[in-house]
Image (cartoon, rainbow, N blue to C red; front, side, top):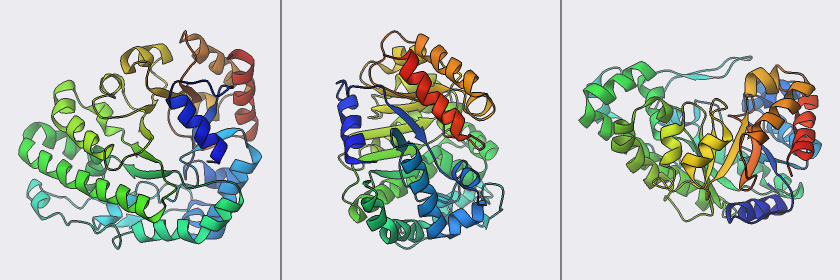
Length: 345
């Protein structure tokens, strides 16, 4: 993000009017490689392609806030790699991390990752170091420390079904696993901040928190996420959960979140009522069926519908209900921007 974009984001979080209705999208490897015209392995492997594609996005759409901005990542393999997961790489699909926890007894032997040396983490840091000068030349800074959330990482290490069953059947081991991963995440976030002092925000992505009930949320999610969003003092505490998000929304204050990207299946007004007036909402048109598969006219109509779902248009970043999906064309991004300017004052 540029200095102006970052300062306007802080203005928005403080409840003030930046003078316009901001448009922002979470962009990473599901969208960028295909949009730029390369395959996924080229994107992950090549610093040149990674930098050029991200620069193209910010230069082609200078008024859009791309979040977190110049995201150094390897898809869902990033954090599991630090725990020793075997990684599968495909040219046209997202990479996949194989399970490392085969039995509930394996949890006690899970390694403690060193965030400075283990898995793909050093490559992520080095990519940013190698390209930081070019990022700054383009007028941008590295603003966010980023990680998948503890429940998501647990599901990668164990398997989604197995992890959900463990929450119900093995509460002691589940708490141990989540606590172990939470400690790792906090260390990882702090290390990113240490490497790049320009970081002023934490960005956590966790969809699994949308699959658990109220009891499990209070028992496991709140303590873990509260620690994570307090890993270091920062102005922006951004959570992405585009699964069912109603339980999450009403507990955002409990976990110290002030910016929330949620599922398009929930209306803007519904989430505002649960989250409160202090949280910046990031949403909320359907990413795949409208933003990617729809016409420009349908995109604009979806923006109008989202705008009509909420009475007050303060503390909102207009976006999709999730990350930018594969296949989104420039004309639909332009239609989205036009829709915000036309329908939202």
